[in-house]
Image (cartoon, rainbow over all chains, first blue to last red; front, side):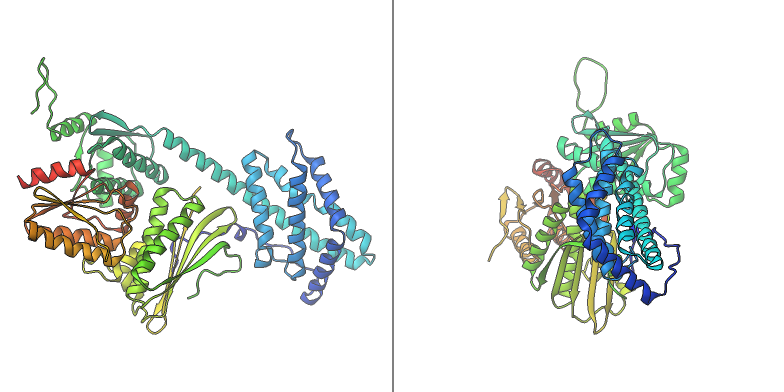
Length: 312
Length: 145
Length: 118
């Protein structure tokens, strides 16, 4: 009974090539491959790092020491997973390797590398590996098998890296959006004790949540007991947004502040009724001005003209 | 019904267990979950949600499960991290889990609010319970970007 | 055994909850408050939860119960200082504490109690 299970990123990869060898022979092949890689670890690493630096197009060069240590960690993880007999990069045996790649991807995405530059980390491993395999395996069939194995694995890992990269880019964008929202939350203090939150534009669930949390925080900071949420500038409201609005009103009430919702246009009124949202507990007003008037009245004040200040 | 284990399940970065036998244990549970949530980088609201969910299930474990234990883990799934709580008791178990989850907010107490509330406060919720088999509840909250 | 102190301010009782309460402590508070309302003939109870960073369904029900019992004893209850994160979580939990009056802080809570009993 899982609510909202999220697919792990490695579920996206689908292996489509067919292994030419039967199972019992292929695990032997993996073991051989692992042994060769382990034997030639230093040489492979040296060439691999050189290959990456040569392909790097960024002016701020990769920190060689760090690159070397990451590469070593990757290679060891790769060999270990291979040695366990597994060629399914989605399996547990490959989990340390996947995690390392995810980190590399994430950090490069954040630094502004392109997807190709990032995947180069994995793909540039092929040449050094092939060179070693060619040197060690003289029999054509075992060489072909080992090359096939190595290339299939490296390809899948390279693809995984690209997927992880894309995911991180999305995360960065979303985080930046969120930060922008928090900075630009327009809560206005209309009067001592009265806040207004004029919302503009299309509200999505995430944005609404951020903005509402901001409003509640401002309520605490200013000690306001009335908050006017004006949605004149909001073209449409869907169920989620309507629910967030209602939750904010309820939360504000628990904190000791009352909310007034203003600027509900006819279309939105229809939507809200249609969605079955219960507005009976909430004060609503057609315009922000009306809402302000009500708020003042509740605070025992009235706007009047003249030279004396009256309190109603 | 199995728990969270799948071949490519999340990696566990840190794990600790706490006993749940007394009221004070629930207080300790709240503090421990808060600390882990802070360490994982959750916002204040998200911290509060998971600590509250923990409190609900922790209390159930003691009151209806006769006591048990909880495993608090910080987990990672590729690029995101989260907190996972696994509650376990060998109490009488719940005869009708569906009903228990549906039960509304009875002022007299009861399992209802605790279970459904904790589910609402979590990103992932998993319950395994039957008479004679005790109860296991797993909650996960992920840190959003 | 530890108890949460209850202060008397004129006709009102003031309780400031500053510790993460275990269930027993909460039950004791409920009992103590009820007794004090009768003993001091209090007309109002102000519960300050500004220090609480978690309020779960048990504490929520305790607050509801205190409000109900006070009403029976002809006293008003006001809860003040709920933190935004706590309020958001309570709403998500489905606990809206109907029948419990709220205010932002002790000062406003007192004003509310005054106007309620006048």
